[in-house]
Structures are given as structure tokens and as C-alpha cells.
Image 1 (tube, rainbow, N blue to C red):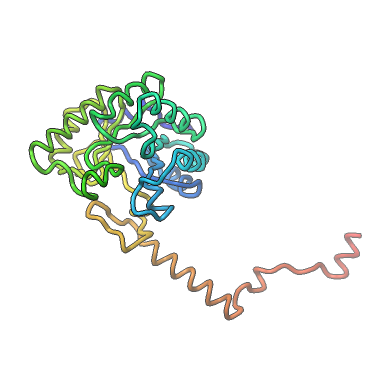
Image 2 (image 1 turned 60 degrees about the vertical axis):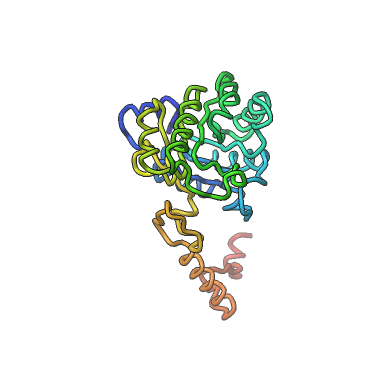
Length: 277
């Protein structure tokens, strides 16, 4: 099967087809989400929180993203692969941004890279795109700026703030990004940006008016039932299923119910051994 490309995704907006994006961080999950038919897979720097156990995304390195990108790429046959550029991998200079974006494509097997920020990231986006690397923008709540924003809070509630996000989205598009993630902005603001842009928007906590949606795989699968932000819908509660399975396994090991005869191997009989030799 052929992996989805940038022109494919641009056509989806033109044809009013919703784009389905989900995160994945390893081969096993990538294979499953690809088989389910998603359009885009994001190796997000959310790996720092979901996989590594940090409180934010700021500790994630380029090497981390390369490793997880390679793992995910092996599991995909049809979905487009986007890999996040982590904190301080593009903020120093456009040249630094291009070098690290190139590593994510060459070593991490990304088809496109994603970086946060609007007007402040426009020069970096432009240089990366000029080199032939597709870019996904990201405006609204930008998790790498969590300290400056005072936490993971909705952005763009006031008119002035909403106008800033609109200008950021337009700047990202003008710099050459083929897609823009809108995170945690009011739904009317996101709908207005979606209408104004020629490129697709992917919402997360941004309402139904976006051209597509993205969720973290662990969140939609209910892998951590203690974490339930407003914008997440759980399509399963796998934490309960996994805990039940693990407890059953532990109980059977301790009672010697597992392994049963059907899970064990036996030596060949004397007659069978004679036939072999």
C-alpha cells in the first residue's frame, strides 16, 4: 500500500474530507492505528509525558524523536508520518531548525516534521520547506511554552488573543506549512481560522470545525483513567482490561495454574526417538 503524501492531505481539505490523526510511539501501536485506517500518525514530543513519565515535554531530545520515529515508521503502510521537533531543536536559528528537521527525515524516517509557534517560527519553517521538507505548524496552546503560558490553559478566549492566534496561523501558512495544528482554542476561533486558511487544520480541543482531529493514542484508549482532559473522548478503558489481565496472570502463576500442560513442551517418547535416529 502507498503512504499518504502532502498532496493527498491537501486534497482531503479541498474535498471536505476529515483528516484523522493519532499519536503513536512504537511499532506495535503504529501497526494497529495504521490497520485501523488513520490518515496521519504523529510521533509527538508528548512521548516525554506518555512514555517517559515527565510532567511536560521539555526533556525530550532529538535522539528520542529519531528513535521513536524509526520504530513507528516500521509499523506504517498507509498513514503519513509526522515527527515533532522537540524543545530547543529549532528555536536557536533557522539553520539549526533545518539541520534537525533533516535528521528527523533521514534518521527518524519522518515524511514531515511539526514545530510549535506562529510568527516567531516562520523563518525556521520557511528554511525547512525551502529544503524540501514538509512542515506541520502548531499554534494556540504550544506545550513547549508551558511555563510562559502559565500551564496547559485554553488560548484565545479574548478577542485580542484570538486575533493573535489567527495571525500566527496565517504566518505559518505563508511560511510554507502544509497543515496547522490548533490546540485548545475556542471552537469559533478554530472554525474561523480553518475557513481563512487554504491548508488543513487539525484540532485538539478546538472543536468540530477543524479539517481534522488528533488525539494521543493512550488517551483515547483509556490507558490512564486518572487523566481525562475535557477534549478527550475515551473510546476504550484499557487500563481496566490490562489490570484485570495482569492480576489474572499473577494469580495463576502463584497458584501453579499457569503454565498448564498445553503451554508446556515434552520430550519425545523412546519410540519416537528411535524413529528419528
